[in-house]
Length: 461
Ligand code: SAH
Ligand code: SF4
Ligand code: F3S
Image (cartoon, rainbow, N blue to C red; front, side, top):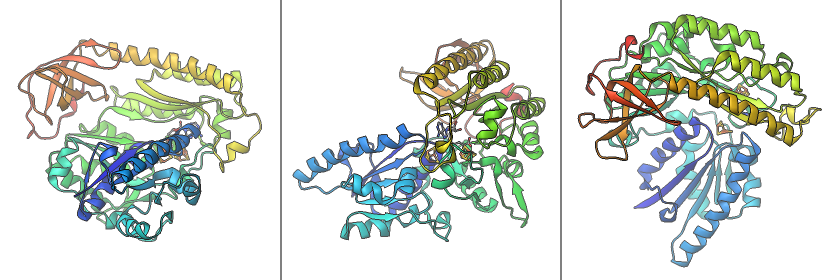
């Protein structure tokens, strides 16, 4: 029996891909291990989005080299693979910089892992960063029910990959390629398999998930809203989420899905990046601050209890104090429940990296601190406002203390509950009694067993 260790960086897509890689390797006799020292095969599933993320890989490879040497001293072989977006962006350069690497494989070639590994056994330093014509999803084996179950009651499901938006700061269109949507029938059958194995929450993912326009079973083009409607009917699926979306693709069908689908959680991650129209234009976001405000108004009208989350970049080239003040104004108006914020990182090959007016590091740091301070105030206020509310919680794991269970609120908050009659996969209404900085504490009210039908809309109110 051989063991594989996969470490993922970056976005949810990499988490999903890591599982698919493990699925491809399972028929080859590989079992997963959480312990790198124990692994015959080490896969680093990398992220190229910011310089820091990309550089992390090389420090990790330093550690992996030591490990490989130690294992070699015991007569054990270790194969080292770099996958993901750094693999796609840097290809053969990785092998030159880190000779410990046996194989570099881009995100579109995972289904070829077995043959690539066989090749790497003969010649070290194999590189495959093609965008093959065949659909990798058609060549990826499905995991067993036990395997699915072992991964938990909440699962990711890729429906769309790649991006055609070309925001001027972003590497994703280069590392993940052009937008491709999977046919709805394939997504639905994957969803059915997941649900049949006990998955209760599906997070539908794509680099630009609301740009989804896959072929429907009726031969027509389906939007994400249409797809979510069908996914909500899959028996056993109690909760649906989707990420990450772009403001330009928040169409009527998707907004209507928020109004109509009880299973669609009232939580929207919609990156805005900046509040300044000048900067948004330079970013090639192709929407203004007010466009974003109007979109949020529409979504809030459809689903008044919706909570918002976003991504921000500070210190984009040319960003003045006045531009940054516009971002702060937007943030104060929106009151985000949660958010990610970053200092602009110049990425080789992207248009923004060549722009005039690169912002000094200390200015970026000061703006980031100010922004994060406000976002944290808003997040805490949102969490505190949960106290006294009753929300449905999906239980995912046992807590640290005996009799304690941990689940997620509709708003992705961790909720701790003391109860001895809750099983993993149960949904139960919980009254929130306390808000700690990073989790909530609640008391279970009624109870809804694991075999319950789709959660009703009222459950989230
Ligand atoms: N597909 C997603 C974004 C993926 S990257 C979307 O369109 O929203 C996740 C976040 O990383 C982005 O929303 C952005 O805020 C941030 N990001 C991307 N490129 C960056 C860069 N060069 N520097 C700093 N942050 C960046
Ligand atoms: Fe990157 Fe923009 Fe595409 Fe998102 S929409 S992946 S930020 S290019
Ligand atoms: Fe990173 Fe690639 Fe995701 S660059 S954010 S792992 S698409």
